[in-house]
Image 1 (spheres, rainbow, N blue to C red):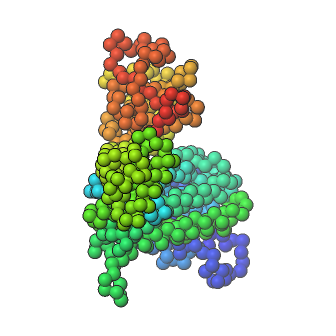
Image 2: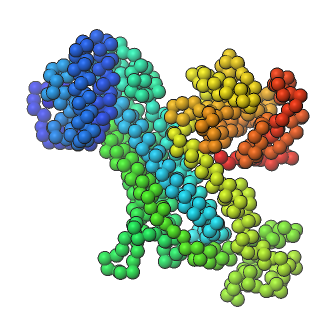
Length: 626
């Protein structure tokens, strides 16, 4: 039985059905199809299309199908239906009778499949996010194990400068965190319901699409029925996130393959996750990492195929869009599998400390340190660069390391070179010199690792995002400010004041619940202040506060603000984020605006700090690490 046979008198050719039917792959949408059907039954009852008895019978039949699908996901393949929509109606009619024929009233396969696919994408995103966190966690543990171990860093695959192994691992943590953020943002955009849009022009029954969207767990309903049934932006965006993430996984894999090779030998892959050669007994192959690298192209290919499928399609639905599923399903499955396997195998990596450190000393990687040494003594960098290069040539001719040249020979390059140059050329000094934010100095790497662990704890606690606040967030913001005002950390704010200033607030949301807030208040002179910053007590120490500060600073940048201030009893928190201590007595706007109402105005114990977003000629541009 098909869902469209009434207009046809002839028999559909089997060859056509073999080519046309989609059940062989869209059966994976069955759980989401049944979820939509359950919500639609309630809609039909509200519109008096179904009686109470019919509604209950359909709910019972659908519930049993949900149980059956959970036990056997491939159950639909046993019936020769055209697609998953036809299968549900056919099997329901077999089980509960003709009432099943009423189920499709007021809806189309067009809006139904678009809704199914969004629900599938949201579910897959949740799983991918969890798997991403698994890889991040493995990299963080790896960084902890080898926090102080040094190895060579490369440019152009040539030894460049020494770096800490933990610094290498944290570079990929940064990439995967951005993948996680992109995934969250994509999930937010795909979280809207097409159901009730009909074939293209809207449903023929007077349903409340907003209530239906909420019943299905969506944030809202799609605003345009044409867009609702033909939009596959969410497929493209999720494939894009997956593709970029796979590129990052491929780069991790390429590094490990090289570092574990006989030519490098810094890393060792355990026997548990390596394979051998059928011919060469000595071989130990990093197959897992090579497969991840190879599967990257497969996922990217699915993204390109989807873009090309969509590029010439007119509105609204076209059968071409049936091609949105197979590649999408495969890409998300491969991405998830690669994330899961990397989370498993990274703990199986070990570092050969002696080889890695020995390699870090080779290749004249301290040549830049010699140039910096000369710069510290007054030489122009371009001249220092030339002198250092000449001395490298001299060391190469003698077949020794740069630091093995005698002082006499070093001084032929420049008389500025003294005995203390040997300490400057040491591996330890080279690392320690890079003591800037983002550098590989042990102090910087230790702090970066600490902050990365805090961010990870926040993400593991729930899918969090920091976003612009809206009026629905006001009650939660009021509760947060009231809590910290009672603790003496905030000034109390009236509900109506928060409502009027809602555009200045950002909120941190965890699993749909507002757990933090902060505001960027702009004064009449163009100075801005971060204030009312607070989290639920159980959410502190997880990096969300830093993300709220980052959000406010980004807002300030977009507004062209040069300086952001803060008054706080927790100055160390803001100093870690790049703020510097300032003289708060020079802030007349703050004194005039709030201090008159502060109960501690005559014994202020808050520290003033500031963050410069643009250079003024005297201040340097600050950066922020979260």
